[in-house]
Amino acid sequence: MRTFLLVTVLSVSFLAIAGICLGTMYFVGKSSEEELLDRTEQQAANLADQVALHRFRIQSPENTLDATINESAFLAGGRILVIDQNYRIQKDTFSFQQDAYIISEDVMSVMSGEVEKVSRIRNSYAKVILPIMDEENTILGVIVSTASTKTAEQTFQSMLRSTTRLGLIIVPIVTLAAILVSWLAVRGLRDMNRRITHISEGNLEEKLPVKGFRETRYLARNYNAVIAKLADIDTTRQEFVSDVSHELKTPITSMKVLAESLLQNENADTAAYREFMTDIVDEIDRETKIINDLLALVKTDKQNAVMNFSMVNINELIDVIMRRVVPIAKTRNIELTYESYREVNAEVDEVKLSLVISNLVENAVKYNVDNGWVRITLNADHSFFYIKVADSGVGIPEDAKDKVFERFYRVGKDRSRDTGGTGLGLAIARASINAHGGTIKLYSESGKGTTFTVRLPLFQDHSDEPDTDSDRKKRDGN
Ligand code: ADP
Image 1 (tube, rainbow, N blue to C red):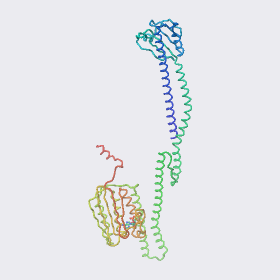
Image 2 (image 1 turned 180 degrees about the horizontal axis):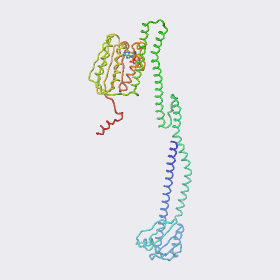
Image 3 (image 1 turned 30 degrees about the horizontal axis):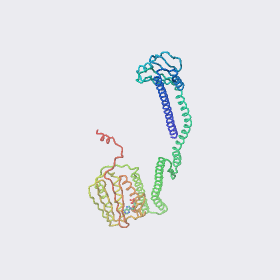
Image 4 (image 1 turned 45 degrees about the horizontal axis):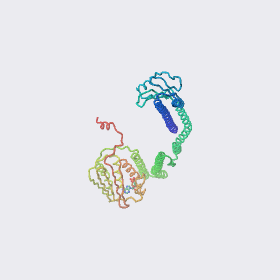
């Protein structure tokens, strides 16, 4: 990137400098040529007027015309010819062709009035041919004036020298500036790269400094956010592993204690064996339940969730769950009621949603008092449906309300363990509801009861899913 910047800045700067110099030289060269032609033309016009005034009496002692012409030619570093109507050279500042006749195309065309004048630069000479006219504009002859472009060339050459000198000063300055600019531009990135390498070696607590150019600051801020998230995931993962190990260890420890006490008791009879074995089987069941719940949680976790959405009649889904839980509720004389305000059909993952509702209803029975009640209600508006599970149970203490959705959290661990809880049910429920794009809220008063309210969308948003073949065909209309 640095080389790219350096090459780009240098190329652009040099092209710009070269463009400016060449342009200036071209215009200066052109304007000095034009100026020379103008000057020569003016001088020739002036001389033509004087020749006309003196009626070609150039060498006459009455006037200084001859000297003026000679001086003009000398100053211009050129030659002046005065030609009369008969094409005879009346004056040649070089004297070569004095009194000779001249037949030249340019002279003839000006003499005949075919062209007003000839004015051009050729072979380092500016050449101007003008007619000599009297007051009635009758052409009496022509004047041919040539002037050397040497002075213009000299100006141009000196200009070239100045430009080269200026270039020799500017080029190193521009080069240094380009090196400085490219170095400054990549300095932040280079520094960032060094720190990222350090962070990637496992130093997740380190942050990138938010400084430098705006783009580098954005990059650093976003990178820090990603790293913070990574560190968060890392902590959560470590906590999860430690929670899981602890939870899985508890039944194993119990089994070990049970088995060891059997081994130590040499006189244990069959009845004792049966009793201990029943306890061991219970612990195995618990271990299996924890593992199953863990698997369910991993599957429902938003990132891993594979959702099988389909249109499901929610009223029927709740009916099925009700029928399954009613016998359990009856054993403790808990009244289970279900009220539906309308028929609800929604796009959900049937298995996962069924697990959520089962968990909430089972909890409402589990953490209830004998002779209590559980009320389930279902309602919907134009975009969401709402399931409410209210109970008359033991309630959830204020400080535990946020925690009940955390993995393995149980209010009064022993109480929950007696009811066969793993502390994973509500974590699974929340993950499942989130994967549906819904929310879960809880209202509870310790000793009075608890209400869980679930809000879920009636339809899923498929806009971010990739097109299937059939979608594409439908859209294209074939
Ligand atoms: P568990 O398997 O222990 O039931 P959950 O995640 O389903 O795990 O629930 C977490 C904890 O929240 C439970 O241990 C229990 O203490 C409390 N809880 C859940 N539902 C209710 C309820 N309806 N009434 C009172 N306490 C509840």
